[in-house]
Length: 103
Ligand code: SF4
Image (tube, rainbow, N blue to C red; front, side, top):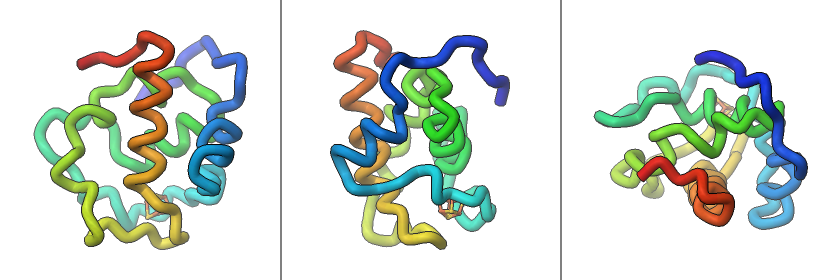
């Protein structure tokens, strides 16, 4: 994953926190969810969370937001109790609202 040079005006972690009470900055990139990938995903959930935590626009422009639906079930457990589906749905909504949706 390449870090973008741009950043977003409102910190994404704050947007996510306000919408879901989930703090993506708690993602330690522990690797526990790295194997959760389906065709079309270009970033792991951890990569999406780490991008959101550093306010990198790639958190809103990646394909994972639009291709990971099959994984967004109760089996999706984060080692640090981050509600992964809630965060992904919020990022997808934010991407749409900013006209950044890739799908
Ligand atoms: S399981 Fe949770 S803390 Fe670990 S990498 Fe995935 S999102 Fe981050």
